[in-house]
Length: 371
Image 1: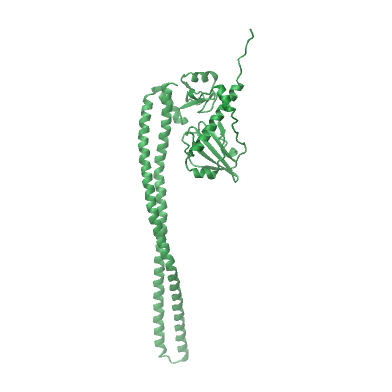
Image 2: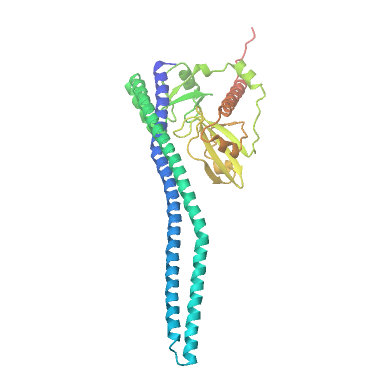
C-alpha cells in the first residue's frame, strides 16, 4: 500500500472522528436545555403546591369573616326581638336567627375540612421542596458532566484537526482535491476493495481494474469515483479460506424475528452493523458503528416486518448471526458490549472467508495439455 493511500485512509478516519465530535458538541447544549426543562417542571410543581396552601388560607379567612358577620346579625336580631309587638314579628326574627346559625355551622364545617386538608397540603409542599433540592443537586452534577464532556470533546477536536492538517499536507494536492470533492457528495472519498468489489458503492470491479488496484496503482471507482485501495493483509489464501469456511459457520434463519447485518458503507457513517427486530406488526432498526460499537442515530420504528419496512437497507449487506432482543439492546444503552462486538466481527470474518472459498471454487481452473 502506497504512503499516500495510507495518509488518505488516516485522513478519512480523522474526518469521521471530527464529524462525530462536532455532532456531539452540538448536541450538548440541547442536553443542558432538557436538564433545565426538567428542573423547571419540578419548580412548577412546588409553586402549585404552595399556591394550594395559600388558597386554603385565603378561603379559611373568608369563612371566618362570614361567621363573624352572621354572629353580628344574630346579636342584632336578638336585640330587635326585645322590642317586637307581635308574634309574627318575633317568629320572623327567630327565623333569621336560625338561618344565620345554619350559615355559621356550614362555614365552620368548611373551615374544619380545610384544617383536615392543611396537613396533606403541607406534606405536599415539603415533599416538593425536598424533590427540588435533590433534583437541583443532581442536575448541577449533570451540567458539570456536560460541560466537562464539551471541554474534552473540544480538546479532542483540536487534536484531530491537527492530525487532519498533517494528513492533508502529506497528500498530493490534486489527489486531495479529488478526495474532498467526492467526500462532500458521497460521505467518503476512499474505499477499500474486498471480494472484487468497491466497498463504497458495492459495484463489482472489472478484472483488470481489480488487478491494478491490487498491484498498488492509483485507481478511481468508475461508479462512485472514490479512490480505491487494497489491503493485502486481509487477503486470505484460497486454502486458508476454504479451511476457515469449513468450520461450519452457523447460518441464521431467514424468518428469524431478530436479524443482524453488516454493511460496508452506510451514508456518511461508513462501515456499520444493522440490527432489526419484528414485534406486534412492526419492526425497529438500530445502527452501530463497525469499529467502535457506538450506536449511530436514533432507533427507527416502522410498520411491517423489517424486510418490507427497510428494503433500502438490506442491499449489499452480509447477514450475520445474532439473536439479541430489544430488551437486551436497551440495556446496552448507546454502545455494544465488547463481547457482542467481538462476536459480530468474528462472524463477519467467517462469512467473508466462506464467500472467498465459494468464489475460489467457482473460478475456472487452468487447462492442462498432455505432452
